[in-house]
Length: 171
Image (tube, rainbow, N blue to C red; front, side, top):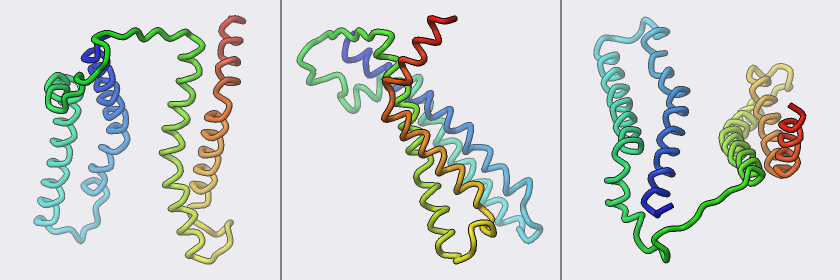
């Protein structure tokens, strides 16, 4: 594998990751138009539509850059320079991939859940009410459990990889 092909692979993975994340946040732009209050006037809606369209256009341009124009990114940032070797081998065994995958997935889940958990916990402490009366208690519990599971998988990736290998042999 050359440094150029390595960076091509990394940039494409980032582009695909952005598409997956975009599936979660792009529908949020439609909400104000579908469920907007009648207090909006036409000028507010035009501004909201313009800002949303600008964000979507920038998002699509960045994804296009990462997926289809990665050569220009590699050249611009000189990513394939200053490598000691012109080619390097990247041989990963199945067990190594099975150890890396849970680490990456649980790391992303942890990075996703910690900010929401902290925000909900902060809101809960500011309201000074009982936990059962807190309107977002279910989200607080969900983010706590998600963070806990992500930490457990992150710290036990060998056990998870061994369990997956054992289940694959049984089937």
